[in-house]
Length: 211
Image (cartoon, rainbow, N blue to C red; front, side, top):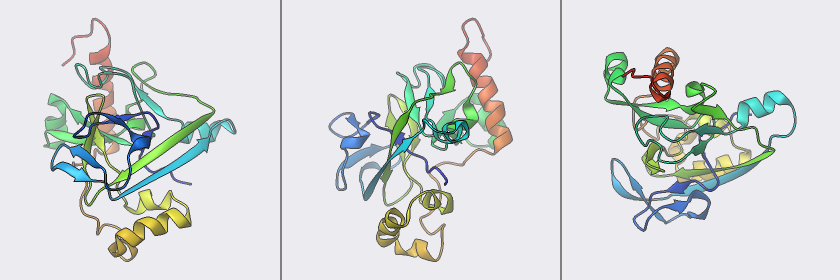
């Protein structure tokens, strides 16, 4: 079983009427996006995972906690919980040197450092997905991260019924997994992510002046 990128229940998502818990959002609701303003939700999904079984299952699927300020000053403003494969936007002077882009998307699990980014070991977690007409950057607790991206990996993480719901909305995905369009930002390569993770961890430690 693969784990699609998603938000943990209780995560506030910025909307035109202010932040709303992700689990309260429905198809047709409008959400604020970084690139395209207000956008309508086309599909929502949810899944509850039991994590009190084998240790390897918990290690794969337990949520990642991004401590306040771990990605930059006040980013996020409060601790933020996402699934391990959920990609967050990284802005840092080193990003341009490594990738040639001002911003990149990075899976949360590649930012783990045991102090400012860590995995929560919980008995159960409720994950929620938000799908739009295109891949979007959303904001929660002042942190930018991705909406659900229905590529091969994302769709493979669902059961047959849920997968069919998404394919009914976007039938072109049946024959071409990338027909949904590109990701909202360039996705880091693993070695780039690990370099960024180390720099961010050092910058977040008290007394560390690393840029």
